[in-house]
Length: 358
Ligand SMILES: [Zn+2]
Image 1 (tube, protein in one colour):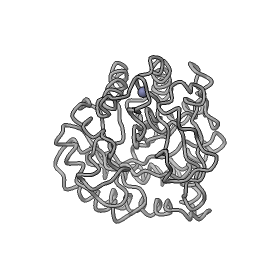
Image 2 (cartoon, rainbow, N blue to C red; image 1 turned 45 degrees about the vertical axis):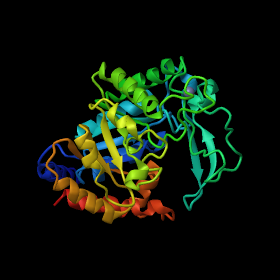
Image 3 (cartoon, rainbow, N blue to C red; image 1 turned 90 degrees about the horizontal axis):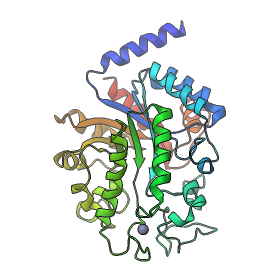
Image 4 (cartoon, rainbow, N blue to C red; image 1 turned 45 degrees about the horizontal axis):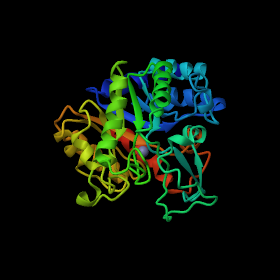
């Protein structure tokens, strides 16, 4: 009976989908022992809710064969990934693997109120410290923001002569194991770029450094018939728009919008209020997705903007969920409470689903 119900719900969900609208969520990869819970959740909740795309934050948590030393602490195996991809494909859900290039080469560890208190290097710079754009900045024992170094997360130097031998191999492996048609390379919140102390980058235009790295990755993927998706914040002028240094750029990278290949898909995230930045990206020739997070009113306004828009380059919406995979499932099922700002994720998800089903 449950199977028939699921089938019916799937049928209704697909019937309501009148075009190729992307109805997505961005989720962290599950731990290996929780994969079956995740698969059940995709069958019983996500697919019937009409979700057709998952940006799957695998990061470094894959058992890489080309550079095994870069395998993260919660790595999934090749067979784990194949199982997930096959299952999601059977439900009509496209998986877009995501690993952060350029920035986010270290991570912040937060307390239960969502405050960052520690910081930790990701495997790339842990194993190849020579790729660090700002080696003079050491990760502190105790992290706090703001800090004198302006340290949010680390970046690799895009002009280091060896860095692409490594990162492009990593992307190649992910594309292959996920059978990906699109890969998300992050590239958001890159605060460390064009460091004055870097012998290669010092004095160079930050917009050019940023755009060149995006275009290099884009060309590499294009040869494999894979599309590149990135977050949009570095291409927006944070001062002019008043959007600030996080969801837009205050470190001179926004000129990159005119240098980046127009085939790159922009995931335009705005959590606090709806913006018109989708128009800006579309006018510049990009395809764009809007990404809410934890505020259902913002998500509703953004969805109205999407529905009332006529451009076929406006692809849809992807909600970013920054809880762990299992936390989101447990939160959905009422098994845990969330105290941080992420608690709005669930009602935002439910709001989007209700809008998708209208
Ligand atoms: Zn550099």
